[in-house]
Image (cartoon, rainbow, N blue to C red; front, side):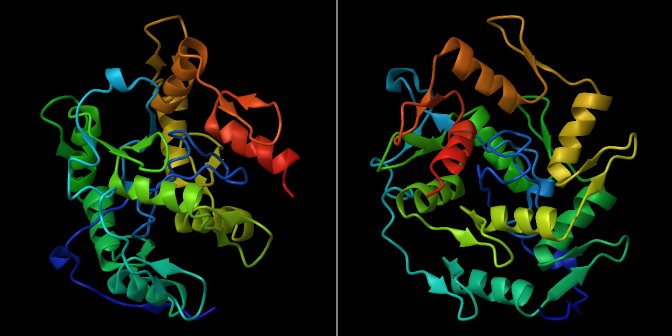
Length: 308
């Protein structure tokens, strides 16, 4: 592995771009729930600064879908976009959608370039990540929603929040019934579910469905990275898991179900509860008669019983 090259930068001049991904690999510490939305500290791995839950929107009754479904009637929709050229890294199997992303990948993964924070020990893999880190952690910048009490740590997080919470925007897959809350989620879905793209770990047999999933796996399983709680002895494997731990255990935040007495510790838990208990949604296995109540449970089942 290349030695880290530390680069100083004036982060205030950097434009911020964000992407969101979902991952439901069974070997991840937590997946497919808000606890699973692993907060990132790198460009595609920026979830540390994302408060917006990127959930799978399962359309079970098209007549009840609220808001705009971005599909055939929108030429700019990812569904109608022509297949873009992918740029492959000549040092590994990574594919990028744009040359700039390939450049950032090579700098971070193969050249060891890092952008250190001058206020703490954090080191980002991109200048934009460093800018977001300083704004969120050291400057306390927030972007409040004018329609609810939500406050995002980045402008793009606020935009995504308003689109899927208040405007009902979804990005529908043209190959199945899946509908994502962001274009990047739709891209990850199609690559994972329909194109079979995997990101193998070079240290074990694990293969993630997203590059970020692979990053989390390597950090948790092979590098032993942990995020300790400053209020108890708990140590999380991701920053987002630590945040959820604090909200649940130390702040007492709960998400009550309006149909029964259930109360979830995260919005994703409440969503899974409603789908399983009140909507009867099931995820059948295509190799046996098993039907899971959650997509992550089906993934775990397949890995355990149909690995070959």
